[in-house]
Length: 297
Image (cartoon, rainbow, N blue to C red; front, side, top):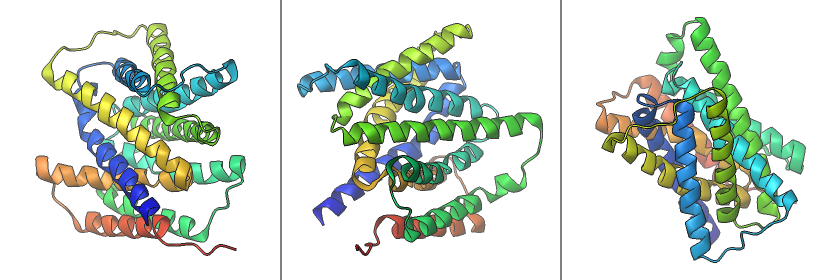
């Protein structure tokens, strides 16, 4: 029961925080380059995590093979994933971007099976299908109004590649977890390497690295760095290590529901019948995937 309660706490942290970031990210991409925003976000996150790791007296000295692991986790999870997501949201609505990212459930499911030989249980498959169907209902109006203009199609393709990058990062993080490296350490180095890689991309494409020094942008930057990156990723990777990346990825299905709830509070969002059906399906899939006990052989 204590383990279940701990998993519920970790899961709640991920969904609540990431559900709110859909709204907060708009404070950045409307006033700075997406790549620049990602660079400063994860550079600040790395600084916060290294400070925490020093305070907790974690060992930060690892050999080259481990640093390669940190590097590739950083590139895929904290750089490519977010650069592509931010860029996609300049071409498609945040709703369609969220819909793209729910594919992470299936990418992680097959990734865990292929790399770690984790069996795909019937309840995980059914729960994921229910959640995916729920997300489709939630964004039904946007799907029905979808147009096949090149910009929209390109935005969707970028969104799916962002999800694939995130899934690769998840698999690398699983490997680090199984090597019993503290998550604060892997994330510290990963976010640092990710921010350096993002900086290299920014310089390559001659991006303006300056940011607006306004309370709106800086507040969003601090929130996304501390809560959306340091705390949420710490909780998510802890959860993934405990229950598997294929189940932890279900946070990407519930987060949009949280985002809609916040939107109804702060933006007068109206809940349609489609959305209500979608939320029920997501919650049913969530219960089935995470909380139903499996029979063991």
